Length: 254
Ligand code: BTN
Image (cartoon, rainbow, N blue to C red):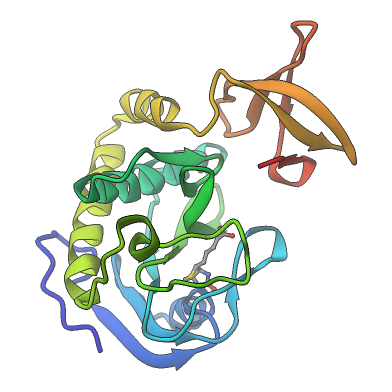
């Protein structure tokens, strides 16, 4: 059960709690379909049985140990072509929240995974619908590993693993997280996209370092040199050429 009173203007003022559900993103989509969605509604569950990740992956989360929720937003001020700005604002909001835990170095792995020391602490799945040339609704699904200590995925980690503490009060973590997310969302609404982009690039996992990536089933050495205006990953290859990749085209070698 989540009882929260976040210090926000609208995000998390309406909370729909389900003890168990398949995917909070799917429940959020049903609420939108029924025309019952308020801006900032949070759908949260203690036990997500079929959580969805990016690229069709499953999101693993043991019951009662983690944060798995979706925020319904109505970002009609963002042109569909600029939707990546929402990814930037949300991942910065999560990153800001994590600053209070004094973790070694929290990074945003493009497009919006949260990484600490080469391991994934959280993930974001944003699903948006359009009406004409405007974003109608965005469902911002967030999974953040909190108290879980063992994972099937060897690349996953949690706050408990990283800090060797447990965090029994998930409601208060959720409140704080919604507050930092709303701050960044409001900044975005006020047009602070350039500053947010700079903050995002500062936090970007492996920026300006040479690493291995898999492209078209081949391993290549390349350096992340930025993000295109529309959110593609820009890589510099050893001979100096730059190429832009979308999520389906590239895999990091961790
Ligand atoms: C990823 O990194 O692949 C994104 C993971 C997103 C998981 C969250 S958990 C809450 C919400 N509901 C879902 O089904 N997925 C997102």
